[in-house]
Length: 158
Image 1 (cartoon, rainbow, N blue to C red):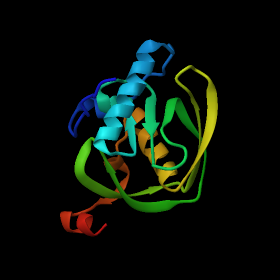
Image 2 (cartoon, rainbow, N blue to C red):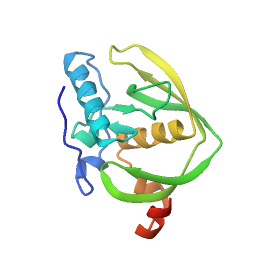
Image 3 (cartoon, helix red, strand yellow):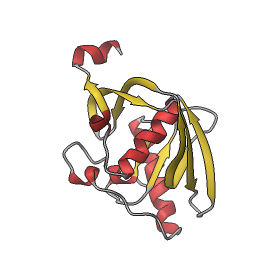
Image 4 (cartoon, helix red, strand yellow):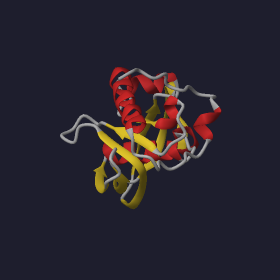
């Protein structure tokens, strides 16, 4: 495993739509392992492949619950309901936070690192994280969805 550099605000790769994964091989496994190590060190809750410079439909989420690290290859949201509105940030946009509305519940269909299809449900923070990371795969960053960005004073009290 190796740490990968996290792409920062202003890099055009963050605005590009990722290509589907077609080969479930050692290269994909290495990417997933590297992303997991990078996410852990960065102390984030999610990371998408374009954030480490790879234009593939791969993301990971770990909200610190019993599910642990969730690997999503070629994910798509197939159901959503409810709504939540709250502060959101991103490892690619350090110290920037905005108020973003997301669904309270989502169901995601994806594949695992071996190509096996599965569905997973997310609620609250997990739903927010799934939506945020899948947005990255479509070239959308949270700032585009933010109702407003928070000032430094507001961030300290959030």
